Amino acid sequence: MRHPTFSASPAALLAAAAFVLLAAGCGYDATPVPQPVASATPSAAPATTPPACDDALESYAPTGALPSPGSLPAGSTMAEIRDRGRLVAGVSADTFLLGSRNPFTGKIEGFDIDMVKQVAEAIFGDEDAYQLRVITSADRLPVLQADEVDIVVRNMTINCARWLDIAFSAEYYRSGQKLLVRRDSGITGIDDLDGVAVCAPAASTSYDNLRRVAPDAIAVTATTHTGCLLKFQQGEVDAITGDDTVLAGLAAQDPYAEVLADDAFTDEPYGIGVNAEHVDLVRFINGVLEQMRADGSWERSYDTWLAPTLGRSPGQPRPEYGRTP
Image (cartoon, rainbow, N blue to C red):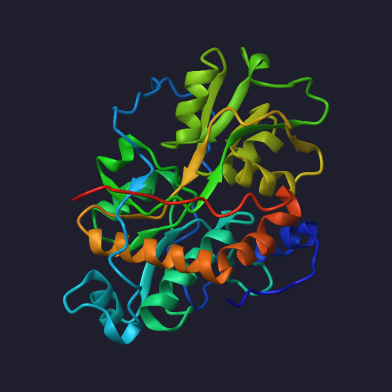
């Protein structure tokens, strides 16, 4: 796997990002980077309760050995993607470490983008045979249901509610929800959030979890976590909540912010989203994830993007299979 390399500091990256944020480049389409919501009006939507299911992490087992690009089953979703000439993936362009635009190259890169590259490599024999569509958290299910993208790799939590609308690969990363606050805020954990304005992206599990575990907090939404960071830096909110991977990237962009070291108050298992009708593609992707475990590419990707901030690798999650169409 090839990774872009650069030695600039996060501050330098942010300074350079201003004029290239909307630059077009190879490998992704002209979909604009989502802009933060201007209004800080707290949302009054109630927290939702996912429907019961036996095991949200259970996915479709691979069927035999992973086929080579030249021997994809005729009529399969993978063959259709190969014949089109590119894999189309919905991703973030502003989630530092997972999927964000490199201001020097204009390319979107990160841990999630490495997952896209691995699927493209398995279908085409070329890890660069992909097109990225920049989407928000709220876009993730609709673009899959409308078949506008083949996969979504955008730090998306696997849960029972989402299985009603789309399908998921096996878990490819286990994150957890935490809080980002100002260093002198006096906020030490969830119990200190009564009356505190806390931002989370709209239509995200982070928002739902915030409403559940801190019902007396003032829940504020933005289009993306970067939108939350803007509100945070402008003093419109006092905290941001989200997955530790995402918050680590935000903290790297603000020297006055810190991620609270308390244990995560949720488990956030990430899966690759696929249209529910494309079960063959889910099985294929699970074969790709198995191959990544065997050849060490998952660990190499973790070491490149996440280890410098999050420390020693927790290891690639073990898959759970048994789901039937």
